[in-house]
Amino acid sequence: MKRPFEVRIVLVRTIYERNIGATSRAMSNMGVDKLILIDPQCEITYEAQQTAATGQTGLQNRTTYKSWDDFLEKEPESIKICFTARDGKGRQVRDIDEVLADIKDHAPQFQHSSETPYLLHLVFGPEDWGLSGEDLEHANFCACLPTWGENWSLNLAQATLLGMFSLRRAWGGSRTTLDGGDERRAPQGIEGINPEQTLKTWLEEMGFDLTKQKKINAFTVLRRMLLQNTPTKKELVILETVLQQATRKLREWKEFQKRDINKS
Image (cartoon, rainbow, N blue to C red; front, side):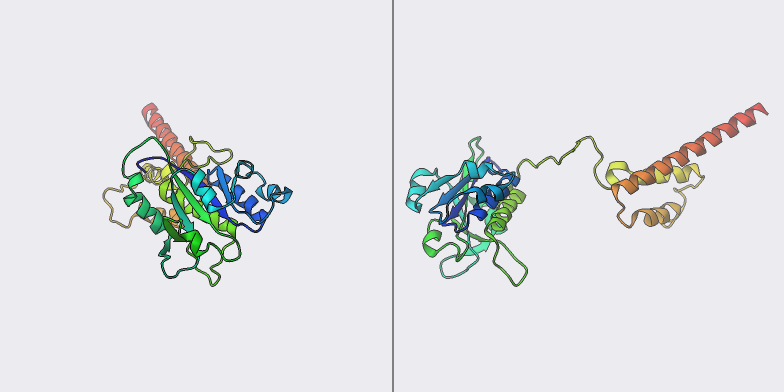
């Protein structure tokens, strides 16, 4: 992105407080802090706090507006993406990935570099019928979350999580470091520990001339047998350790033979 962005989640006329709490938790997973409620149809009690669990920030720092007019008067200028599962006349609903690509490539707010974040509101409707036609009049874009099963209806908190995930996947952000993470560790797979080179070195020490053999040779056969099944990182480490030790032992034996010949 040419400029940073700020995301705020907007829940319109939410019926169940547990969904507000679960949304707060999803926000904490996706690095979003600001939760906005428009005309909520429930009270926020201990149930919402329980559902939020370790993601209390959005819930505790929420802003509540009594109406869209109140929201539009007090919230900064933004691009508003309204999520709906119903298509129809005038709605022009597109998949969220397409909407995000359109904004990134064509929205004037993101066509020049700036250090000032631009605001996006991701707007979700109530659990019964979703956003109304009047709600969608405030949208810059109408988006849907793709589903593959017969049931296209998503739980509100699931929908907010998928919406934020789609945005992060498309536009990026600072990924969470896993517990116990260490950047110095080798990456998963062949690239990090390079058992292929170790295998070649071992075969050469065994006396195989890999430069003079055909495509199907000792190296290609063993490589296919040992590595074709996508081994885990631990398995690759063990394989490389075995080959390295075997290579060292071969070199020690060759060195011993040389010394023995020189003595005689």
